[in-house]
Length: 194
Image 1 (cartoon, one colour):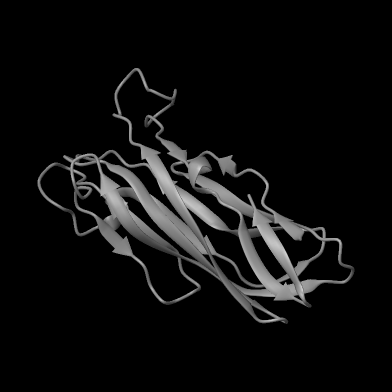
Image 2 (tube, one colour):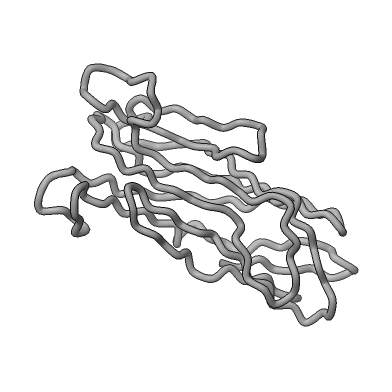
């Protein structure tokens, strides 16, 4: 069995933080190259601290070129806002038309946490993200299923995870990452690992 290996998630701090999902190919076969036509993520099954998360909305589309999101929370305590940019949540924007060559690392997509000050009777605890990978040459389709866990922290001092302007939340994917088998590719099966 050959292996595809995902290195640990990297993070970049900013207004929200961005996790670059990287895929590294470690393959014994010589000359294997795939074209990743698209990587697209769909959000579902959000759970909250007290039932469904307050003002929950899924912003999933069939367009593989846009960022799909899950958002929740009320920005002022007066009811659900119609402006999702004022809510907390997650986004995933996958890559398109990328040639994958053996023994290279490449960006699979961008995972973003939007940390906004919100009011919520039920905070987001977990949400599922299904990332569909569509390869060509040869044609292979597979889905990577993840459960993202969130520790939504109060935006007051002292911060639970040290912070500057807005207290950071903690996002955890480690318990949901399972090996994925794809193939056959030229009669061989490959393992995707993070």
